[in-house]
Picture (tube, rainbow, N blue to C red):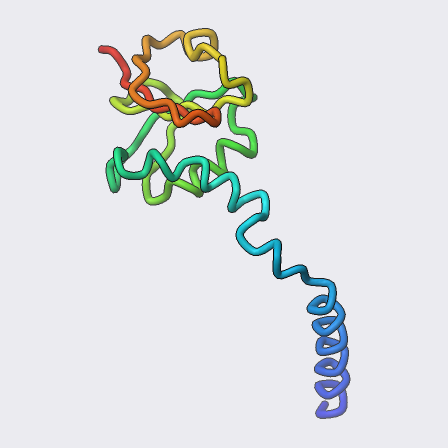
Length: 123
């Protein structure tokens, strides 16, 4: 049993040292998810600290960007409906019109300029 544990530790250390040598420390903070999260930083001061916000996008519903947006804005819940007072827009095409994707009447409150927009839903 002890010999097996010893071989496991040597194997893990060998793999760790190979991975560490190949690790580029200049990439810290520049990976895809961190860059995606930073797109939403200008919105944070105007968003509630908790609750539910709507979501509109020009991409397929429930795609990876929807889940990354949910992760980024947690503990806020991101609902892919536009029936909420605040709606977050996330567009690949920065000139996209949310009415084409949602049919909701949304008033632009804030355009971050990188495809991220903040809307108020008209009631």
